[in-house]
Length: 64
Image (spheres, rainbow, N blue to C red):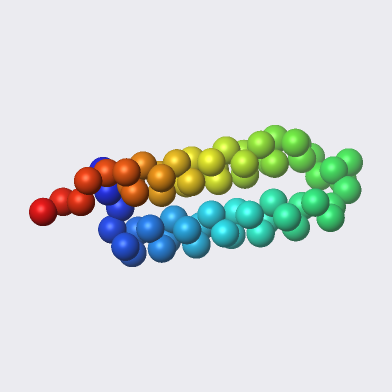
């Protein structure tokens, strides 16, 4: 199902926020954060899911 323009903007904004958090974590000592690897995996999976939603929305034919 195609996303509306507003939904695409929200998904894109969320993706950028996730990327920002992921980049910020690169400057944190993983030993000081419980389940650091799990957090990184979760962020990566969330970004991939949002990216997939944007891609599938672009491939959906427009509704008339």
